[in-house]
Length: 416
Image (tube, rainbow, N blue to C red; front, side, top):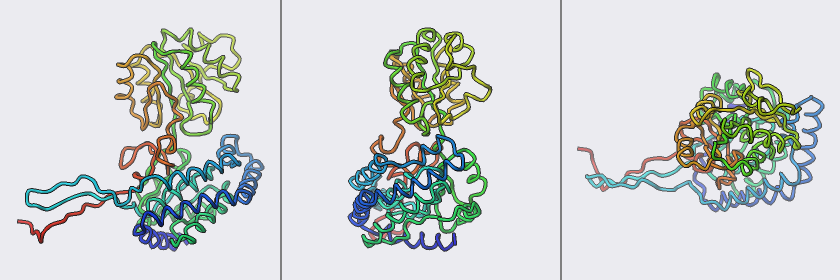
């Protein structure tokens, strides 16, 4: 079955790569409309998934990521429409040059080919990845988690309808509708039919794909995110940033996990941070230095051995006092997993050091980590947030789903 899906995806991708921008944009416009018109059906399918997830005892963070409602579905339709209006990277030419012998060279963007995207719990990924693939002329094989099966079937049916009604091959987007894990292994073995594997999920999924894939794997979407409150930070404004980064949506990969506070401001800043976030339901794991500043607060407990290496995905926040920016940078690089990390400071030299020395896909100065997102970055959407270095890093939008070919134009040139 997987080989047949791979063959169909390869054939469809070759057709998609030749389609004009107008055809691919037309499919996106129709998809946005179908998402609006089919809300009741999609939400009913999602309700079934959520009900089954609760019966299976899935934790609150996973159920939150699984859940669609009117607002989230409307946002998906809006994002597809916004993606349609973005410039098409396919066919873009760059790095034009003329060699001394007169041969004219340039590079031209082309689709990557066929993507294999393996993900858990988030039906919005189904639409984001499908729309990005259509816009960039790629084919994609989607394998969502069993907990999203009904939602994904409903959403992919809309995607395929939009493709077919727009005169494009429906097999450009396919869903592995069987949750059997064996099929994931078969997908990872399609080295001649699939060009890249993109897992979106926990560390165990990433490790499984890296260990078993015969296809290049782009990993990301796991983040232990930090904010460092420097000695010169405006504490009142810092509290607002920390509150946003931790509580807006704690179950996602760009949510805050650890606050590092300069020791010179810790006694004043930490109680205010805790008192501001406790009413939102946040509980805290504090190192010995932070505990000294927070005596008598019920929401604060001593940090355990692995707490600073935990992506909480819940209303839990680590607190640590550091002696200076050197320790803040060292701690962040040792624990962050390379996703998103921020410094709050009025010291430009420290801000530049943070930008230069923190080895993460996204680094911020005086801003929430929650901005690491394709939509927020103006990319329309993202297929993943890459935390590795090859090909793409950070939110993977349209250009990150293309590669390029060299084009040489001559006048019957021969090499001497």
